[in-house]
Each structure stands twice: as structure tokens, then as C-alpha cells.
Length: 106
Image 1 (tube, helix red, strand yellow):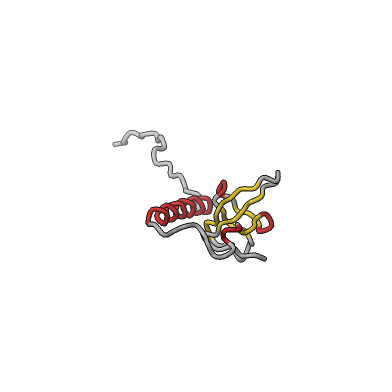
Image 2 (image 1 turned 90 degrees about the vertical axis):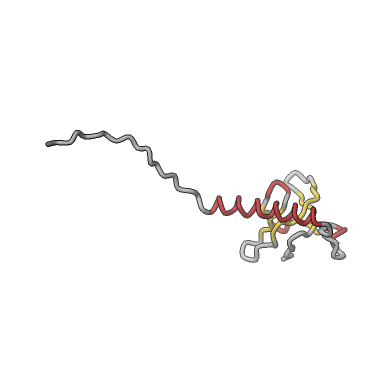
């Protein structure tokens, strides 16, 4: 089983045979074997991914400048927030429940 690292450039092939250049957001999950890629925020199996030819020799997404690094950091934080929201649904508290006011008895 191939384990892809964060920032690896990969080629994703969908069910229709279309190929997309994309990159890995999070390392391959060792328990499920799924890899989180940027294309449509998908979690995919390694059978539909292949390492991009430019990434074979160790070249990954250029993170030399601070703008690219910050952009990737914000994108990764966005996906962490989305994943956490799916795992922990928020509870809705109803505070404005109409109640009947009773008169004070003397």
C-alpha cells in the first residue's frame, strides 16, 4: 500500500477515467487507507491515485515563498474545521420557549 505524504502532487483518476492534477492535504490515514486530496475535498483510496511524475524525485508543491505556505496552512485549517464540524454536530438550545404566565394567588 502506498502512503502519500502531505503536499505530495498526485494524479487522481475518477470513475469516468478523467485525470486531475491535485495535491494531498493530509497524509494517508494508516487505519482506513484513505488519502485526503484537494480535488473536491475527497477522501480516496490509493488505487485511484498515482504520484505525479514531477513529484517522483522529491519535488512537491513549491512552498518556498511565505504566500504559498500561508495559503496552504489556511486551506488545511479550513478542512480541519469542516471535518471537526461533521464529527461533532452542534446542539441547538431553545431558550425562547413560549410559556404561560400564571397569575399570583393571594
